[in-house]
Length: 303
Image 1 (spheres, one colour):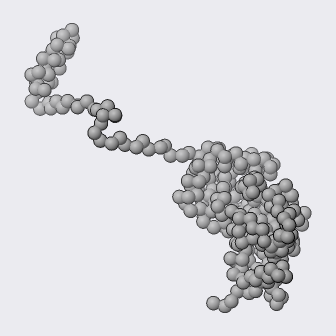
Image 2: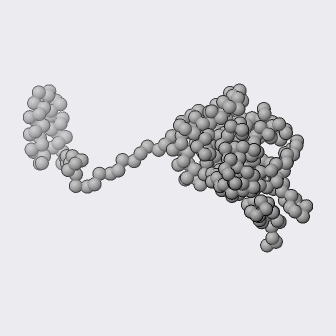
Image 3: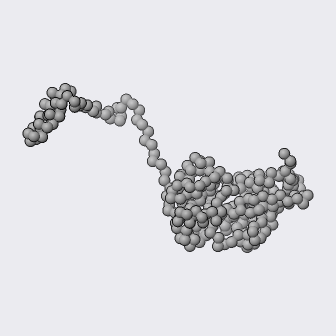
């Protein structure tokens, strides 16, 4: 369209405008330095020759407010567990995305952002570290554990009798040492469990853990049933047939309400489940004698 044609259109469209306004518009259009570029109407989406661009989804956002430390301390242990279950349900997609992208075993969340994480459950923050972070931010951090790192694949072969006919679980004798006490346990040994689990009520009764600690439980599922637990570090000792002791620090999952948990469905007398994490640390050799239903543990061979 030429300038002259455009000027005629302006005169026609703005015929009712006052003379001063019309004159100003015409002078602008007649200026050689003014370049008029008319936009080409866009094609409807269904007739466009170029493929439509995929509309990107908005990033997921974490739902939930970090409470002040004093408010969190007033919650009972069960209330903290229910809060964690609610947060996991509300944010399961967000959590799965973060765990996958960070390859994390655990993450710490503050104001909807991950402020700390690691790919090893051994570094799970202890009570003192959590208190320090809460004091620094003025809020209690949320800590979530990647369920894939505590996955359990139940097997039905062993030394402890189970609810199934002619079925047994291999067992290992371990001793848990805390600052104030020790506890001897006969744990079911399961190579299908990546982590180790223990009855929290038993630990409380033997004073290996305190009931009033500022602990934050997590929640997971096993055999279709939800259970709550917290991470606690112990010195775990195994005595070899030679009398030699193998000992390593290990963070175990201390399960609340153990007698109502899925861990006693197969073996009602179970008090602990030793997973792969313990023996990966000990680097010991294990012989399972099925004929005599015995477990023999030997020291790691020198490199």
